[in-house]
Image (tube, rainbow, N blue to C red):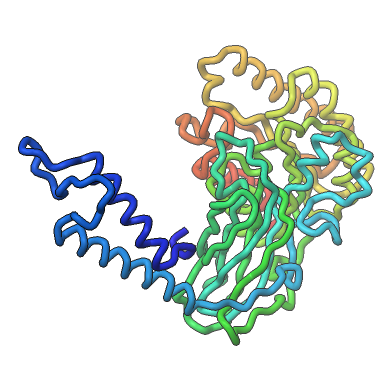
Length: 406
């Protein structure tokens, strides 16, 4: 915001504030303040106030000078490597237009969010600046804006991904942020996670003039097909502080395998159409994490048909069914606790039935250890904090390593 203030604007703001202060806090015998109170005239303040004004005035001038001396060359992010998409040519959305008439409107609208999509690029620039445009709606009071419509930058160092900076969305729609500065001039690999709960219309990567910025020659991931995750708002990323902390993102970096995020907030209800869509994405493993959006009845009715359909669409690909998280408030709310127990029993029964029926490469991950037992892993009893996501990612990674023989 400071970069938008010019010298005169900064002076006028400071003067106005001090003028209001002088009106509201007059000097009296009982209250010998800094001001000689003459309403409507800031110029009657003592020398100290004038010094403060000049200092702040110089500060605004310095900020504007710094901003003016930091030009960037911007590149459309579509020039680089886009990862995390199950389908090509979908821009920064998750499903192609052909599915709009095949799925419910709520699912389609959520599919337009850029959840799990990231940009890979290399650069030797000492600074990375970003401009991005998103949709306007943010109806998520329990989720940080940095997750909803912010951007999250990681940089590769010594073969591992490390957090480099976050772009905070101060505007409803158009945002710009310098994500990291002061780097050396060696070529580096970057991965930029896009917003989890908004559409992204455009994004531009800014580097210092003359710096190199390129599309990587390869993805850098293991020579494996992506892991496809289907689930709820938790799968979509709620309520991590930023998109790089969703469990799909954590697993992607920790296992060095691309992930596809098909989390649909409030709408992960094991619909056949979503099984059809998953089956069209060539994967190394399918992960089903829909417990939080199911009733016990739906869990009983839909789990086996959904998995059978997916297996028919993608024979031989491992399927991991994840238990319903043990929400902390279920310890006290008996209705919630009993519902979770019933859903998990339905999952266990479905798993046993499928195994007895001869299905291979079907796995079940129980809920007991997914987020810990101390009750500290959620923001609201349901949606996970960064702590909760770190815990569930760790448990999923153990199982995925066994399944994929890593």
